[in-house]
Length: 471
Image (cartoon, rainbow, N blue to C red):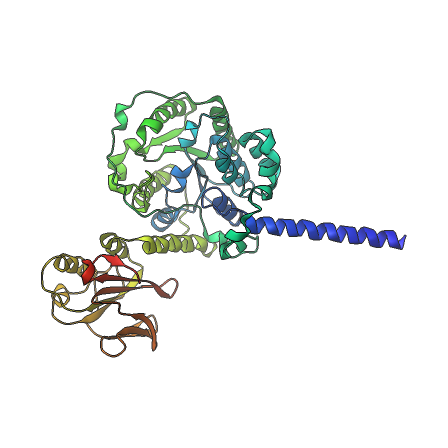
């Protein structure tokens, strides 16, 4: 009897060890896509009951609405739970999953997913829209709606589809466990930098209404029922797009459907005066860049405050992860910027200090003359920028437009900085070199108070016509 018990216990331990190993392997090898997978995995890390506004849909939601703006400007604790090219059936099952732990006051649904006409999406889209979900009956139902029967098992388990990722693994792949720090700080939205500069077409010129597929319509009505059953305000939106030929007929169809159902629908393609969005607010691939997303989010935030009894959670320690999210989005965006004009404009938003260094002397002519005028908006006196002397200025708040006196030694956030143009030809922080001059030009050392360190260092070399570069 004892032998049987020992063998049974040994088999049980082996089984437990095997299951735990497979689970851990799945966590590591899981494809960490920014669309579909990361939003869902980060959603699981959110404190129960903290998400007041749930943003849902395809990439036109995840990229076009900025959770950082909604938080900074209005104190709205919003989360963007989305997937790239996400059909309405995946959005429905994402919502079912979300309502297990959150009771949002509103669901804002991007209706672009209603344009999906095929029974199933392509295999890559299938995977990213279910892979981030934890194993459950809801995931099983999501898989059954997402793909034909022969793919159910592999999609449900996930590991068979991405088990060969060993050579691709990075540090990030080991940060998606329940105990991993940082997931709570991601609120789903994704920022893009770049200007596509598209021409804005007239949405009013497209009057046809598309026919929504039965499958898409059924799952859309499922979302309506879920929200109404739990007393959640459902707000429909079509975020700005330059691909009006594809999406406007569906927007027209949804406008009719929303009226029948008594739902609010905001077609932002027809609200350019309210949003202020222009052709330069789009990224190269027709999504909004962060500049456009901020504009849209300001408008959406006003709508949400007018529609719902939302609390302003800024300053509440229980919602501090939204502060971290906003800082992360803004910092990541600054590091992505490659154009001088955009960089200086971003610095004017504030929250950072700048050590502005002029290394060299140039004649008072273009392109430096125009660039110096732009720099002076940060606070460095124009007459000093145009003088024959090298020097540096500490701007403690990049939004204030005020700089301290021109000098070489500065104290910032308890740290001492020295600019040496002669011996070391470098900048030191508490005696250690943090930057060596690459050439004559202008250098900006950007200090982030939130993380307590230099976030970015950029150069504008005179030999490059004062174009932005990083060493």
